[in-house]
Amino acid sequence: MANMKQQIKRYKNADKKHAINASYKSALRTAIKNVLAAVEKGNKEEAVAAYNTAASKLDASVSKGLYHKNYASRQKSRLSKLVNSID
Image 1 (cartoon, rainbow, N blue to C red):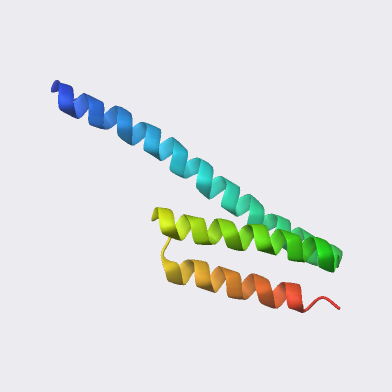
Image 2: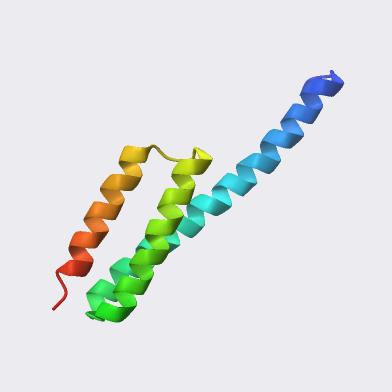
Protein backbone atom coordinates (compact mmCIF):
# COMPACT_ATOMS: atom_id res chain seq x y z
CA MET A 1 0.00 0.00 0.00
CA ALA A 2 1.26 3.45 -0.85
CA ASN A 3 2.19 6.03 1.75
CA MET A 4 0.91 8.98 -0.25
CA LYS A 5 -2.44 10.38 0.82
CA GLN A 6 -3.70 10.75 -2.74
CA GLN A 7 -2.87 7.14 -3.65
CA ILE A 8 -4.59 5.83 -0.51
CA LYS A 9 -7.71 7.74 -1.55
CA ARG A 10 -7.48 6.27 -5.05
CA TYR A 11 -7.34 2.76 -3.60
CA LYS A 12 -10.43 3.43 -1.50
CA ASN A 13 -12.35 4.89 -4.43
CA ALA A 14 -11.29 2.02 -6.69
CA ASP A 15 -12.57 -0.49 -4.14
CA LYS A 16 -15.91 1.30 -3.92
CA LYS A 17 -16.26 1.43 -7.70
CA HIS A 18 -15.29 -2.24 -7.99
CA ALA A 19 -18.05 -3.20 -5.55
CA ILE A 20 -20.62 -1.12 -7.45
CA ASN A 21 -19.58 -2.58 -10.82
CA ALA A 22 -19.66 -6.12 -9.40
CA SER A 23 -23.20 -5.47 -8.18
CA TYR A 24 -24.35 -4.27 -11.62
CA LYS A 25 -22.74 -7.27 -13.34
CA SER A 26 -24.32 -9.69 -10.89
CA ALA A 27 -27.77 -8.16 -11.40
CA LEU A 28 -27.32 -8.40 -15.16
CA ARG A 29 -26.32 -12.07 -15.01
CA THR A 30 -29.34 -12.78 -12.81
CA ALA A 31 -31.65 -11.02 -15.28
CA ILE A 32 -30.26 -13.12 -18.14
CA LYS A 33 -30.72 -16.31 -16.12
CA ASN A 34 -34.34 -15.29 -15.42
CA VAL A 35 -34.98 -15.08 -19.17
CA LEU A 36 -33.44 -18.51 -19.73
CA ALA A 37 -35.50 -20.01 -16.89
CA ALA A 38 -38.74 -18.54 -18.25
CA VAL A 39 -37.95 -19.84 -21.74
CA GLU A 40 -37.21 -23.30 -20.33
CA LYS A 41 -40.59 -23.28 -18.54
CA GLY A 42 -42.27 -22.23 -21.79
CA ASN A 43 -44.01 -19.23 -20.23
CA LYS A 44 -44.12 -16.60 -22.99
CA GLU A 45 -45.47 -13.70 -20.89
CA GLU A 46 -42.90 -14.22 -18.14
CA ALA A 47 -40.12 -14.60 -20.70
CA VAL A 48 -41.05 -11.34 -22.44
CA ALA A 49 -41.14 -9.46 -19.14
CA ALA A 50 -37.78 -10.94 -18.11
CA TYR A 51 -36.32 -10.12 -21.53
CA ASN A 52 -37.40 -6.48 -21.24
CA THR A 53 -35.69 -6.24 -17.86
CA ALA A 54 -32.53 -7.90 -19.15
CA ALA A 55 -32.40 -5.71 -22.26
CA SER A 56 -32.75 -2.61 -20.11
CA LYS A 57 -29.92 -3.77 -17.83
CA LEU A 58 -27.73 -4.57 -20.84
CA ASP A 59 -28.24 -1.09 -22.26
CA ALA A 60 -27.48 0.46 -18.87
CA SER A 61 -24.30 -1.59 -18.54
CA VAL A 62 -23.09 -0.32 -21.91
CA SER A 63 -23.79 3.29 -20.98
CA LYS A 64 -21.89 2.80 -17.70
CA GLY A 65 -18.94 1.36 -19.60
CA LEU A 66 -19.11 -2.11 -18.05
CA TYR A 67 -19.53 -3.96 -21.33
CA HIS A 68 -18.92 -3.29 -25.01
CA LYS A 69 -21.94 -2.41 -27.13
CA ASN A 70 -21.41 -5.47 -29.32
CA TYR A 71 -21.61 -7.72 -26.26
CA ALA A 72 -24.96 -6.23 -25.29
CA SER A 73 -26.25 -6.44 -28.84
CA ARG A 74 -25.19 -10.08 -29.13
CA GLN A 75 -26.83 -11.00 -25.82
CA LYS A 76 -30.09 -9.21 -26.68
CA SER A 77 -30.19 -10.94 -30.06
CA ARG A 78 -29.56 -14.36 -28.54
CA LEU A 79 -32.20 -13.87 -25.84
CA SER A 80 -34.81 -12.48 -28.23
CA LYS A 81 -34.38 -15.52 -30.48
CA LEU A 82 -35.03 -17.78 -27.51
CA VAL A 83 -38.09 -15.79 -26.40
CA ASN A 84 -39.52 -15.76 -29.93
CA SER A 85 -39.02 -19.52 -30.25
CA ILE A 86 -41.68 -20.12 -27.58
CA ASP A 87 -45.04 -21.05 -29.08
